[in-house]
Image (cartoon, rainbow, N blue to C red; front, side, top):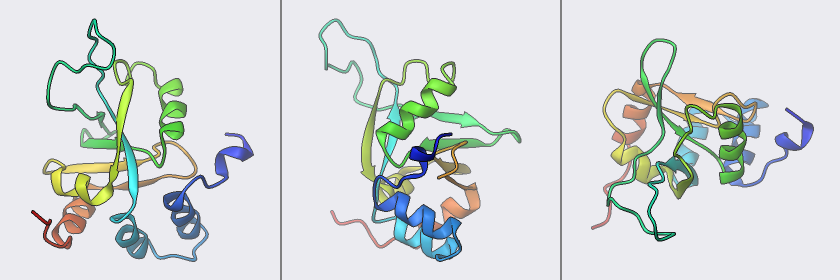
Length: 145
């Protein structure tokens, strides 16, 4: 990883740096993250008319970790996702698009017993196990209707 990869590109990356440098507790990082936008890759269905989707449900990138646990993959920016996709083309096949969305939206909708990895395999990343995801989701305020 070159040094430019460690230059923060947005508020989430500033928070990650503060946490990695010990200036922000992981719990406070998690609480700050829920109000920030993160990027999740979604399966890109091929259609003969560019820009049209065949289904109404986006399929996010979910992988199995070493222990066989399901983990939703997310990134601090689309650029970080491109770096991951170039390193792991097999896992990312078909994921040509994505959603930039508030972390709280994702936490409310993430499947049970699923972890969340932000910038997996990168120095500026963080992994939430399924218990941490469930705890964060449980303390979110009620969603406005």
